[in-house]
Structures are given as C-alpha cells and as structure tokens.
Image (cartoon, rainbow over all chains, first blue to last red; front, side, top):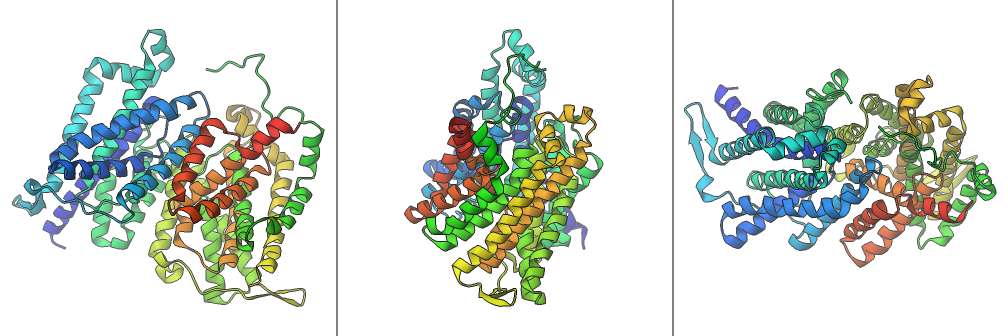
Length: 288
Length: 330
C-alpha cells in the first residue's frame, strides 16, 4: 500500500471527523447546559441538509444555503426548546430524551412528505470542485474547505465561550444554574440560545456533509449513532473531548474502510466499547 | 440538593393499594390470560392479534428494566432480533426442531443481553441510553455484514414452521387461530415469570434502585449486579418475544434490529404506562392497532404516531393504563 493513498484516506478521515465534531459539539453543549440528550439531533442534521439544499436551489448559490440554513434551523430549534422541552424541566431526565425521540419521527416523516422518500443529489459548488495537488497527493478541494470551515467555527465557539461575557454566563450556568438565577441572570434565555446554537451546529454539519454523501430522509439515524459514539468516547459535556474523539473516530473509520471496508461502521462501536471498559466516563469526562 | 419535604406524598408504588387494585395485582397473571384468550376475537385480524402477543411480551419484558428498574434502554431491539435470528437460523440452516430453536433463541438473546448489559450498566444516568443504543447498532451492523448467515439487507427467510407436534397431535401451525393459542402459551409463561420476578425480594430491590439508587447502595444492595441481572432478565424475555415473532412471520427483517425498533418498544411501553404491570401490553395493543388503522389511510402514519407520542410525553406521562388506574381504580 503506497503512502500517497494512505495520506489521502487519512485526510478523508479528518474531513469526516470534522463533520462528526460539529454534530457532537452541538449534542455536547446542549447536554452540558440543559442536561438534555437531544435524540432529534440526527433528524435535525438531516433537516439542515435539506434546508441547505432548498435555500441553495432557491437562490442559485451554495453559499446562501450554507449561511442561511443553519440560522433557520437554529431558530426552529429555539421554538422546539421553548414549546416542547421547557415544560419538561424538573421532570425525569428521561422525558426530554423521549420527547425528542418522538420528534425525530415527526421530522423524518415530514421531510418525506415535502421532499419525497428518495435521496436527492447535493451538487458540489463549482468553485470547490476538483482536487488540489499538495505535492504528497491530490486532495479534493471541497474536503479541505469543510475542514477549514469546521476549524473556524470551533475557533469562534471557543473564543465565544472563553472570552465573552455571554460565554462566561454559559459556563457558569452549566455549573450552577440556581446560583445564576440568584445573581439575577435570566438563565432560561441562555438555555434557549444554547439549544438553538447546538441545533444550528448540527444543521451546519448537515449542509456541509451534503455534497460528500447524497441527502436522504434516513441520513440522520446513522449520524445520531455516530454522534453518540463520539460523545461517549470523548466524555459528554466536554468540548475538547468531542473535538478529539470526533477526529479520532473519523480517522479510524476511513482507515478501516481502506483495509477492511466491511468493518468500517462496526469499528467505531468497538472503539466505544473499549473506552467504556477502560474509562466509563469517557476520555475527558468527569465522574458523575 | 433536593431536601425531602415533609408533605411530599409517597410514590403510588409505595402507598397501600385499595381493594380493587390489590385484587388486580394478586390475580394479574390469571386476569391477563383471560384477556389474552379473548383478544383474537376482539381484533379485526388474527395476524394482528399474534403481533400484539409478540410485542406485548417484548414490552412487558422491556418494562422490567424501564418501568421497574428505572433504566431507559434504547437497545432492546438487539435482543428481540437476536432471539428471532437465532431461531430462524437454527431451524432453516441446521434443521433443529422448533422447540429447541426457541430455547436456543432465548438463551442466545439472554447471553447477548448479559454482554451488552455488562458494558452499559457500568455507565450512569443519561449515558446508559446512549450506550445501549450504540451497542445495539453494533449488533445491527454485524447482522448486515454477516449476510451469509443473516441474509443481510434482505432479512432472513426460508424457515417456515408448518406443523407443530404437541403431545402426539400434529397441529397445523399455518392456521392463525392455532398459531395464536400456541404462542399464547409462551406469552402466559413470560407474564408469569415477570410477575414472579416482581413479587420476589429481587423485585423489591430493583424498585428500590429506581426510587433512590444511592439509598439502595447504602442499604447494602449491590446496585451494579442487580442492574445487570435485571438487564439480562429483561433482555431474555424480549428474546422470547423475538423467537415468537420468527415463528409467526417465518421471516426476520433486518430492520427488527435497528434502534428505531428499540424506540418502538419504548413508545409502546410509554403509551400504555410504564408504572404498571398491564400497561406495556395495553401500549403494544394500542400502538399496533394505530399502526394498522393509520397505515390504511396514509403511508406517512409515522408522523401521526410520532406526534401522539410527543403529546403523551408532554401531557400523559403515565400512559393510558397508568392514567386509568390513577383516576378510576383505588
């Protein structure tokens, strides 16, 4: 096996991992802040991809789809938090999970009604087609672009959480919401925004992954399982954990695809089982 | 964090039940057998009745873990599917007699439940649901890849059971009424086993863990081992449901292993009510009848079922049977 092929496959893994990072980050910040595991995360990823496709075909430009769809679906996520999840605070932690599971049925079936049950191809924007010769091999420009976008988004997210006043409130609220209320912060507004942000990240992942795999109503269910695997490996609620585990899982999947294609999907679950045996709280998780 | 308020009412499971309720609890197994005997004559088709039987067993088995131990598993389709696949493979590829195949399916599904339970009960709280889902998806993808055994995407076929020899009599198993009453014997056995488990000291221990895990630990219970045993028992009963469905359909679809199938079990249990013995069976009945009715109207019946489920979580978390008990039965 020549090194060029291995390098290219490694890079595909990084691109795949970058999408996983976005999805898992969304899941993780929602959990860290609200204590809610969003079972509709995969479905919202899928809805994001369709929204991106829809906006892109309406405006004739991929860029509008990339910009507008995550905002649109993020706002939709806020509606979900406000009307459906908010009434469940104070009840069992299982209730929001069950509700979002039911919601994922509604979303998937709703997309089937509007866009049909078959997959739709998502064209790569003309400016990003082709490959780039980096001296060690040819890399698809679109995947380089995806990695770049995810890098910028993660950087912005980190700056936002660590360097701004809002980020301070979010971090403090994740640690002790009651104390934040006592200090006069309307924590429910923060929850609303964080849920919207998490859903927005998932749908950005959906739009970005569109040109790499075709778009279909069932695409969310594998994404949900992948996001769970990544957050369990990285540690739920840990942002650094999501980033490292996301990239690692992406690379492991695509390297396995090179050597033993039939094991590609199985290997990430095996990795998760291994981590659970050694460190049940995840690599970067704190003991509950 | 939460200080026990003095005026806080005891959970309904702790309060002393009234006369009707305690009679219903004492005679829950005979009562459910009577209900099961009547069921095929009350439903529009016998095939639907057999389906209710299968998923009733699955939901009751699942509820041992969810309703009574308080663990929300999203991976029980793996055990239902394992039971079904093992039974099908044993009959179709090894020519094992049907009763031995059922036994193999139940044991195999139970062993898988033990393995998945051993990993997932190491985690706490919300992790548990995610880990069970992911491990069950592992089983799904293994079954997808091992297509020479499982038939892969097309599902498992070719193991029709035509006749069943019972005490020297040959029973035509293709006749839906015969099929129903043979499988009902298995369902009655499963209900009896679950009832027996709940009446045992072990049944009290799992409820103690559900109410307050830390307190149960302080009282000296081995919480991890109790959870694992409950997980294994629950998975074993679900595997019995799986073998019943294999005998019924003579076909195992690959989708029966997908986490959507696990979610369906969760939905049934919650629709009926996870806090009661009969609830899950009622939930399976309601869910399957809804599926039967709505799928005649529209191929998009899942949007209706999903919405109804969302409304139940919001407004009727005790489910149909649980709410009925709380309102009308003292």
